[in-house]
Image (cartoon, chains in turn orange, purple):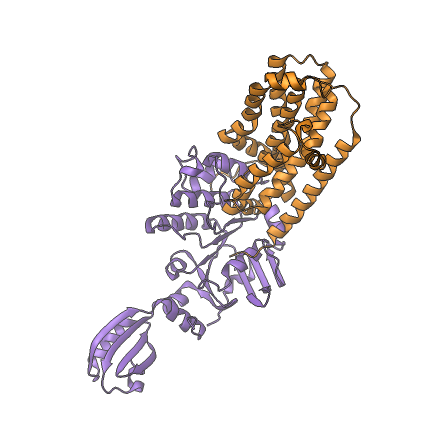
Length: 264
Length: 309
């Protein structure tokens, strides 16, 4: 037995911190993740903010010009994608490969695993939102007061929490082969039906009713109210919080069920 | 031949008492009492479905016993793991058991950082035989190298008890040999090691003590040499028209005599001695054939039951 680390106990980082940094390093190394979550909304924004049809036909119909309206949509999209994928993106694969079980054989508490994944998710959501806001500011010059920028970024950041929880939930209920397809489909459906790609005004009435019960719409609405300098709607926060709690409770329940599975 | 090891009195690391685990009506583990002392390397030997993995999962707190108790140095499995007393390498199923997109060195550093008194990462890398591979991505390792990484993660805690569940499945012979060499070197520091295997040769090669598991119970438990005696049994088969079974049974080292249609089968713990004596005897035989008794016969000898039935 050579070299027990002397005094290693003294300067030890809490396991949850170790785990979060370890995860962060992995995520930042995954090119497909970075492209999908960070680059996609930016590219989409740059391709569509100056669209003459949208600008002509829909200008100011939500109290704000289209480039500003669409900036909010894409900020929300970026935050949702980052939280969703960073949280649960590889969870199904990690369950299948036995890595989550290996972690259970260490002092890392299971809550720390969920907290670490969530922290990475909302951290990247913040980064993705900020990147998109910067790009939009440079491209479209929306001329917003500083307070509106700050509120928008904070709203998207905190509003991404329910989606981090949903990502973890889906990572727990899907198999490693289906996880990616299910997650991409879930995100596209939620985002598109929530009015983050095509404005709600373009929807038929029944689709608008659908949008009103989706968390994606309420995150967008939070942002649209901010850039229009309208009073914020408490329903947006309540719906997002309700989804967040619901997803978290379901995820905790699935996690327990997953642990009780018989082993080979 | 249920001889308890005499080392159990002092330095006990693992204690299982009346351990049961059922899945519905199936009793996967049907009452196990077992003690493992510091310095012992115990092989849990048994065929698939004997309850080895279920037992080890309970030792590690991954499964809750239906009844009975597991104690690791007097603690529950969960406390023992939180205190860094246990390291484990489990069967990984389809995947590698390691997260994609990481390097070997990072992985070792991360896992070591979770413990209060870990081995230093360089020491782990060295003891697991990973020198020169620390910068390698996990996805670019061979099967034997992957298993070494998984072993490295199991020893990061500097554990007092090391649990290995069929750790050499899928490895080729040189990788297997190298792996057991690494385990023996690690165990030499006065730790307890418990591993499951269905290879008799591995139990012989790596263990100081063997517990044979059969239908959820310990069928036999003893030092390696006791088990080896049974395992070394050979089957001697020949044709003989007329030979007294009593006379054949009296040949040296013969354990059992079967005869059907003029074919005699002897089971011997020392085939050389039996065959020499057979030549000297008055028995007129032909078509002599000596084969290893194999796993099934060894279990039969140990348990008195036919597991293939």
